[in-house]
Image 1 (cartoon, helix red, strand yellow):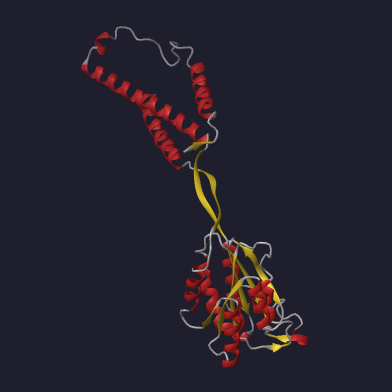
Image 2 (cartoon, one colour; image 1 turned 90 degrees about the horizontal axis):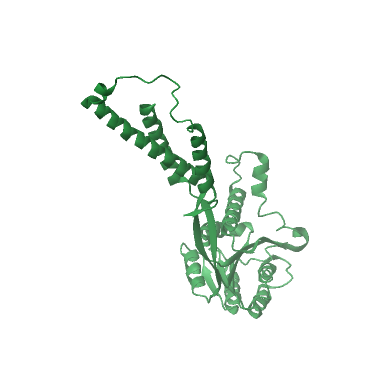
Length: 337
């Protein structure tokens, strides 16, 4: 336990006892009565001696409890605190979730973001980002180790996909909230849709590649990439071209295809993913777990470790003791007044 303001442990008792001294300095003055003569006979009786002993014991307890009250009150005002030391480790691994948010990938994306919420909560210092794309790409979460923010963003994406699939407004308190959630994966991702089409797979992957810092060469860089690889527009780069750039940047892609992906799209997707040094996965109940396990096997090392010290108030025990002794003081003082 650490005391933030130890000076109060001295000041408060001194002030209290100084006040008591000034009040009691006129000792021997009788205010509420007069001396009684010829009391020796009474004082020599066993009953009187017993009562005097009881009175002295109770009076001693009164003094003790009063001193304890002052002591614990001083301790409370001095703000007893505890120090919480936590090791903060930073690892050299960056992961970006790159999601094709066209409607045909909804089933896969729902399972993916739902499972990744639990995975993100178990990360230890790695940076994580989220990018979504259709016609255009949006970086929803830049690389960060703020896992609470990442999980909230994944939850919003999950709700948005679910809402766009069901069009159910019953769980929303107001229209504004409904449209905000509904448009969360649409806003920005359909920019230029009429001119360029949709599901621009190569552009989506390349935008994720360039979301990593090119200056940090010592970091392991990974992309979790979900799509059905069904191109319906005119991309700036093909998937294969984006994969080659990813390889040149030393970024591995872990790709997940949908269950209904056509064979020719699946094979093209698989080859592009393997080109980066990553791995291709079929959508199944164990897909996300397999990806997480494989990502854990990728190289990582501790970049830095520092200790974060957090100080917080810990008044519980002194406060309980203060209340206990204050109660005793009230009880005993009534016996001696």
